[in-house]
Image 1 (cartoon, rainbow, N blue to C red):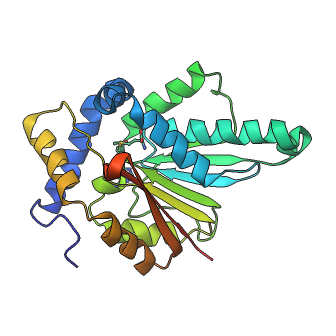
Image 2 (image 1 turned 45 degrees about the vertical axis):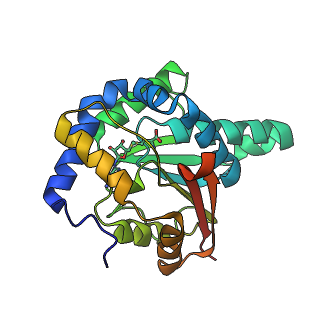
Length: 234
Ligand code: SAM
């Protein structure tokens, strides 16, 4: 189909994505704050609120970077458990997989986990992997999220097909974002282009449905600069 990023050669694209995120890994969180004026925090809060994670959940956060979404999912589960049934939380094995193609991002995430006192938390598992070719078993997850990451994959359809392999009740994505990176000029140009070329909310929703998901919906945030898409595998 014509949804890909045809103008940028595929190897170039992967390499550029690699360059961009390797060069920014350690400053990534600061950069996020600066570029979105801190709003990414609210968007991620909203994402996790919609996901409504539960104790015992097996959740996969792809393009998980430095763990920002995963930490929120874990916090949300802990809060819910404390509120509803503390004893239940201890019995249930919650697992949140943070999957990213870039090991440097994962390293920063692991460091941040330690800083938050989550270094030894068995609920967090860091996995190097490609959204287009994940190594988890079919039907092994309850939830899947990809935040500010679907734009970066070379074949969106492949990533969606991979997402659909897992048995999860929801699927949330934030595709469009007015985000720029202070990297080298080519990488920067690529990111700006990738945002411009990303399919519209409606087209992306239809791609999610084509991958097999049902009840596909999206919510625009701040007038559609950012959107949260969701779907279910029933
Ligand atoms: N989800 C995090 C957040 O919202 O803060 C990180 C978003 S960051 C803009 C995009 C991340 O996607 C980077 O950490 C990058 O390494 C990762 N990434 C890019 N292509 C990927 C792929 N094909 N599979 C998995 N991760 C990928």
